Each structure stands twice: as structure tokens, then as C-alpha cells.
Image 1 (cartoon, rainbow, N blue to C red):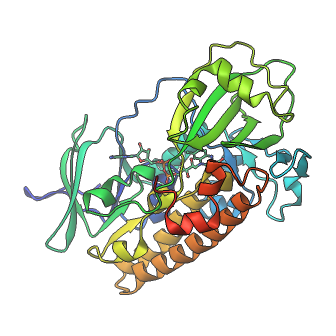
Image 2 (cartoon, rainbow, N blue to C red; image 1 turned 90 degrees about the horizontal axis):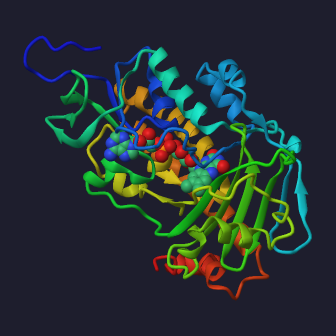
Image 3 (cartoon, rainbow, N blue to C red; image 1 turned 180 degrees about the vertical axis):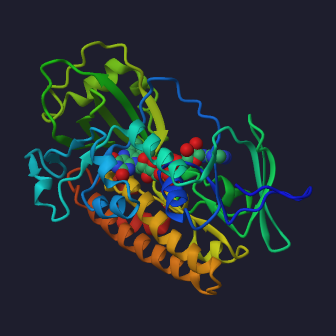
Length: 384
Ligand SMILES: Cc1cc2nc3c(=O)[nH]c(=O)nc-3n(C[C@H](O)[C@H](O)[C@H](O)COP(=O)(O)OP(=O)(O)OC[C@H]3O[C@@H](n4cnc5c(N)ncnc54)[C@H](O)[C@@H]3O)c2cc1C
């Protein structure tokens, strides 16, 4: 790590805010050639609590190989993705076997282990991680990005670098501090629970159902539980009542595909998490001083129906890593080429998302689905 010779702040090649999958992957990608400081806030998660977001497509094989962590990833005990069965526009179940995916079936992750292993891989590559950073502020001064924070160890106060990366997920903490706003105000909420499973539950398929005011998914995860998740609007009058485990389960079990879900006990907590897609406007980002990048959910967060957030975290780490290396080597167009790529990803994603929601015609008269019709999305009906 850089040691200051006088009272000037330590200098790095890149400071990355956020040590989630995107930030950790980028930190590993930039080492050993560059000096990297990786910052995260103290984690409030209670021990044993699970994170939602566990499906990783087979296309991630290539990205894990490029990070040099493919073999260790395969040894971590993630489960191969089973078939997907959905009742989307009709009560007739439609099956898809991911074995037909040319990239391979993909995985259902032990999410906590996956996130922790990426952080460990960043540290192993030589990035310095401070995971107790509080009161972070970012500013640009005399051609350098400056980050100030408090923390538990000796590394506090001020650090400087030509490159600053926002990898703080949906909170896009650095970008917001610098005056950027989130585009796309879809107030989708995910209500979810990790159910203690019954011994007889040997089903490994992913089950997806449309409902009149939202959509469901359920899958078993390698950590042993079954995820049950319902996505609905933040202003839905049923939202509060569905925080009750019995009510959530009863509503789910009205669907044929979810009727057999039977948790071993009923006192599981139901969590609520914002889940709407959105992200930064690449044009606004391009107007910030040079050397500022955003990756993962901070750049573009996906509606969970896309199941692409983790792949996007790894892919943007790869693309931004390439752009940052070119920028440090003096290329003037490095950030703009990265942003051009992000515009293309956002356009493809938007089109696929419109098609996915528009496919549910059986509930097209219901507010949840009307708000997600392509016309409403364009005219801002989601800004409710
Ligand atoms: C309901 C739901 C279901 C999902 N399901 C899937 C799925 O099946 N498959 C899939 O691929 N994706 C899924 N996702 C998305 C996936 O979880 C995210 O895309 C992924 O976590 C993005 O990684 P990231 O590193 O960009 O952000 P994050 O994982 O959010 O990491 C951000 C990091 O930044 C840190 N941070 C935040 N603010 C600050 C701050 N002020 N200072 C310092 N550090 C900060 C956080 O502590 C965190 O460690 C789902 C998301 C939701 C909401």
C-alpha cells in the first residue's frame, strides 16, 4: 500500500466505493498492476440473515475465468440451476430447462458465500479493503479524486486517486453526492422470506407466477432454505398485510405452482426491499470530471425478473477495468467507450423488459401491469 512520505494523503491508482460483487471483482481485475483501495461501510446484517438474489447464468463462466477464480468458485458448493417453470400469461405451466442454454445451466448461489469469496479474491490479489468506512465523502480537487471517511483501523481520513469508482449498488452513494440522480423511478418492492424447508421438499426448479398485483418466484437455495418472493408496487394497499408470514404464504399457495410450499415452521421473517430497475444517465455521468466510473447496480440495476444483476456486476467490472487501464495509460476516449457500451446494454435490457411484462395480457387491466406496459414506461407512469 502507498506510504505517504510527508503529511500528504496516500495516493492510489483507483479508489472503489462498495465491496459488493461489482466492486470486489473490479478490485481484483485491476491488481496487481494498480494500487487499489476498496471501501465498504460496516454491515448491519444480522448473523445468519440471507441475502436475496441467487441466480447466476452460465454465461458467467467466462467472466469468472478471466478473474482467475473459476476453479475456486466451482468448489464453493453452489447448486446447478434446475428447470424453470412459469405461469406467466396462462395457468398452463411453461417449462424451460437451462441445460438448453449454450453457456451452460448456471447456478443457484449460496449468495453470502459468493459475495464473501469475491471480497477474499480482491484481497488475495493485493487490494486493500477497509470494510468499516463511515461518513464517506467524495470530491474532485486539483485533478485528483479525494475520499474522506472514518473507520475502525489506522487507514482513516483522506485518500486520493485519479480514478474513483461508484460500486455502492442501488444507493449509488458517490454519484448522488456528486449531484447525479437515479433515472427510472419504478417503486417495485420485493417481499421475501427464506423459509425453513420441509424434509420432503426436493424440488429444485425455479417457480415463477404472475399475479393480479405483482409476480412471484420461489426456489430452493444451497444454504438449505426455500426463497419465496413477491414483487409488487410500493403503494399497493396489500403491502403491509403481506409482511405477515401466514398471509404471504396463503396468497402464494393460491397458485398451482406454489401450492405445495410448506415451511417447517411458520415464524419466519418477511423482509421488504426496493427492487425496481434504474440507474445513472450516461450523459450526466460523462459531464463529471474525468476518472469517475460507476459499475454494477450503481450504473444500471435490473428488475429482478431479468435475473441479470450479478452477471451485470461482473461484466461491468470487466468492461470498466479495461476502460480504467486505458484511462490510466492516457487514452482520452476510455470513459466514453465504456458509457457507449452501457447505453447499448440499457437499450437491450429495456426492450427485453417491455416484452416480458407485456406478455402478461391476462392482467393487462390491473394497475401493476398497466404501469409496466411499454407505453406507460415511456410516458413516466412509473413515477407514481
Ligand atoms: C429482490 C431482488 C432479487 C434479485 N435476484 C437476482 C438474481 O436472481 N440474480 C441476479 O443476478 N441478481 C439478482 N438481483 C440483483 C443483484 O443482487 C445485484 O444486481 C447485485 O448485488 C449488484 O452487485 P453490486 O456489487 O453492484 O451491488 P451490491 O451487491 O448492492 O453491493 C454494493 C456494496 O456497496 C456498499 N455500500 C453501499 N453504500 C455505501 C456507502 N455509502 N459507503 C460504502 N459502501 C457502501 C454495500 O455495503 C455493498 O457491499 C436481485 C435483486 C433484488 C433486489
